[in-house]
Structure formats: structure tokens, C-alpha cells
Image (cartoon, rainbow, N blue to C red; front, side, top):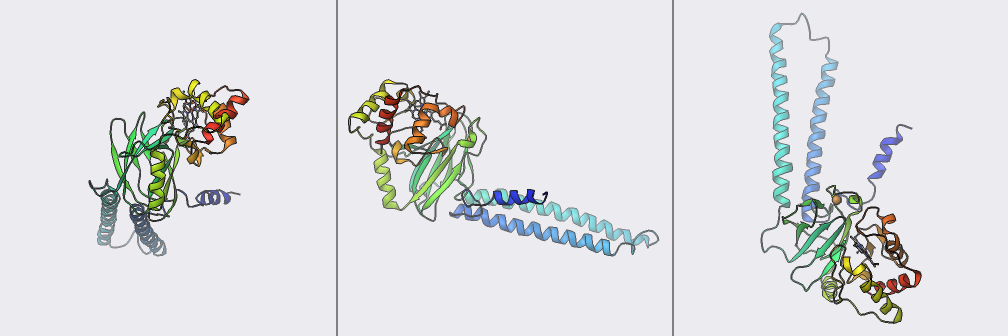
Length: 327
Ligand SMILES: [Cu+2]
């Protein structure tokens, strides 16, 4: 039974999402390769030390009281040498881990990136803005073009969070009043999972996000779409839903560009229907989940900043029809 405990730990590491040892970008590859070199060095050191211990054990009895006093000098040399090796080893590890990796993953030189994305932490979701566009804003799902250096400007509206996409680069903190920068570069088209990595309150664990690395043409089309104002509701039901949204509490907290809703407490919902997930990857973006979220978000993500909203059946159906059309 006890042997199963380490097995569960091992199995917990299955799967390749958020796996630093499955790097998909140049910076993450540097980090992974340094990890393997360090591990190799440590295993080598362990082997040498274990070998010396075994040697001492095998030769026990051949030393000790009665031997020539002069032989003790040899042991002092070994002890001093042992400490020396450790000190040198730790200094080398420090330079490799701190100075070298930091240098390799440092904020990109000005002008070396092709696109800027502002990643703004909120308790507990991510806002992604695309400066230079008018005004593409999304939440929890960032898109970037593949094989393109992208500058991430990490900021926060409240407390310290950390942007971390383990398969692409190291972590970067969002500090109040400060702008921290890091580069993201994805070698392959795909979806990379990220996670807030600085404990930021109750729902920190549900502050995840996706980075979609798209072929450049697909990305451009996505960005053009995101920059546009919201689609007007088509049909009676959706128009009624728009009314529920604009006259109810929703518009005080959420922005839908092209409408009177300008709230900034919650995520921008202008193109809500183009996202695959809701609320920091907590639930899929499907009608049933969305309805559940609106009525009872406090059950799905307890303590989050959106209150449960009291709506009757027809109001909810209308709202779902409207939100579902926000492609
Ligand atoms: Cu957090």
C-alpha cells in the first residue's frame, strides 16, 4: 500500500499540458535543457558521494586507532576538498540557474517583437488587450501568431499575479503600478495552457488561461474580428436578451463594445461566443454551462466577483440567445 503513494505522485505528472519538460518554444527549451544538465550534474555528484561512502564502508577497519598519526592529514584534505567542491558546485548552479537562464529568457530587446499583448490580471480572470488595434480585448483565451515573437506586457488591476505558460517561457509577475515584459514564441500551432502562479486569493486556482498559437492568416482574421464592435442581435428573443443585459445589473460590470454597456469589473463580453471556455477555464462555453454561470456563478467559482443573478426563465433564455450571438 505504501508503495502506491509514490506511484500516485508519479501518475499526477501524466499529461503534457503545462509541462516544462515538453517545451514548445525557444525560451522553454533553454530552461528544459538546463534542467537536464543540472539533473545530470546532481546525479553525477550523488554517484561520486555514494561511491566514496561505499568505499569507506568496504575499507572500514583498515583505518582507525593504531594507524600512523600522519594519515589523518589525508582526511583533512578530503574534508576541505569536499566542502570546496560543494561551494564551487553551488556557485556554478547559481550562475547557471539565475544569471544564465534569466539572460536567456529576459524581456525582449525593443523592436525585436512583432506583436504586443497586454496580459492584465484581475481577481480572478485574465484580460488580454491588443494595443495598436481598436480595441481588441478578450478574456482568458489569448491568440498569438505561430513562430512570431510576441511581447507580453504583464500588468494587474489589483494584487500580484503571475503569468506562466510553462511550455513557452518562465513566469513573469504582475506587480501593481508596474509593467513587466516577457516574450512568448510558439514553435508549433496549438493550444498552450497557462496558469496564474502567484497566490492571489480565494479563486487563484481557477485563474487559468489558454494561449492559442494560430497560423498567421488565421490569427489576423481572429484579431480583425475581435477588434470589431459586437454583432447586433438577430431575432426577437436575442433582442429581448439584449434588453435584459442593458437594463439589468450586467451592463454595470461588463463591457460589450458598440452598446451602452461599459462596465469594467468583469471580462469584456463583446465576442464571448468566440471563446471555448468561461471564467478562467473553469467551465466550457456552452449554453447550459453559461446559464448555470449566470444564475449561480457562486456555486461554480465560490467567492468570485460576480454575484448570483436572479432571472426568471424567459429572461434567462433571452439572455442566452443574445450572448450566444456574440460571435
Ligand atoms: Cu493567482
